[in-house]
Length: 252
Image 1 (cartoon, one colour):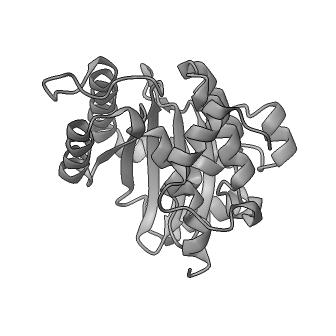
Image 2 (cartoon, rainbow, N blue to C red):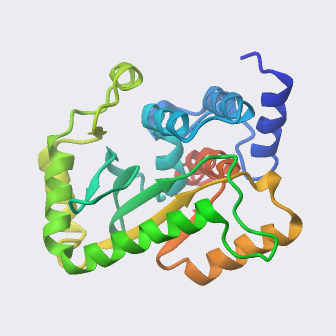
């Protein structure tokens, strides 16, 4: 795939560390991006896209968030697009997964790739502060409606169409499931998450390469302090970490 000089620079920033040496052979079945997908992301980021463009891209290319957040067991159940959190809020994405660590719902809030993460004083900048506030709203509402909310999310996942690459690229809709409705229900129960569901909150914002050294340290410190409940990723890390998933699956 031919890349513009700007996109080639973004791709180099993504694959500097941690990605597969054999990008061209990643399989779609692993739900993790290969070389062509990374080129698409690089071209998009090079053009400084609007938030809506990033939303549409990630809706049509689930490999990135599934690869970013997936476990060694690759227990992908469903990929939710704009799932409700109560009647007043919506996440940008929701991912249902199972592994030997249990079953997990991850809610994702995306912000522009050009957004600043921190002010000169090192405090969260406006877009990051807004995203953190949204997550706090989700957490407060879910804490009061935890059981019924998880039940609604599982029912939503079971109602979605099964993943089909061509259909997704044309019309991603509300999302898609990766196994049968019966398996979603059974696996969720087997891994025990009606009783004690694991819920994580992820923010994707900005570019690592645009951060000063001090702000890179600030982001790492923030994630260490909040890793139990919420993590902030930049878009380079989305591509880099997602691409490494097949290596984990293959034991490499």
